[in-house]
Image (cartoon, rainbow, N blue to C red; front, side, top):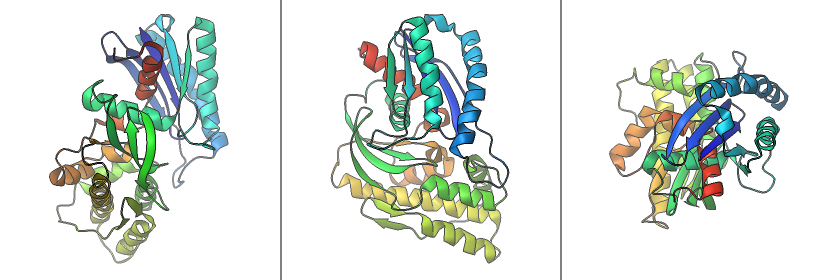
Length: 312
């Protein structure tokens, strides 16, 4: 059985095809939405337009690589997270395309959320199908989310902790734009930070499993005003995120000592954050970048779980 996943987040249009028989991703592609230089995001009306423009070309690309008439089910993220009131218009473009394909093919349509897609992709990349039946602690840290979640498979049981103000990804992007990078700025910020060899011990704001990142933005702005090297500021930012993650993990493990910890979301694809966290906590699971950032892989996997109970 083959399932098609569609995700239209506020930052990327993504498609993926999952083969349940071989338990592998046979196709995936992504196109980032264009953001004007110096700006810190997109209006929803612009995001809807860019998704509408991108989907036909990506669907043609998918069909050339994998004949879409073989699809047995379609999965789509219909909102940001599995919570009451969670809504963004950009996801309607993906839902519209998914409904059309499912009706034309006469196959099931499975609706899920962007966050659950992130979780499923991370679980799959970390251990195939082995973690989908276990309780796990998942960090979802991106431009639109900073949450520490207790999950059973990709089902969110409860929020363990998270940011009380600015998301980690927002802080990273704002600091990156201050340094002259385009939005989103995470990849460029990580490359710049790698040029700094200094040992940095950042100040962080963590209380239990909750954190605050508004101070980080102010700290980095102050460093720049005092003439700190851009590479130092970039590394300071990422070190602060890593130290925050470590302190939140220690707090969460007091409640869930046996649950594996998995890191998902675009911010967690940083090699610097991964290196710092795994040096202190080697058992924490990070996944390759294409599974960590926005993607439709997890959405396709969740469609496979819904329609044929993968892994069987």
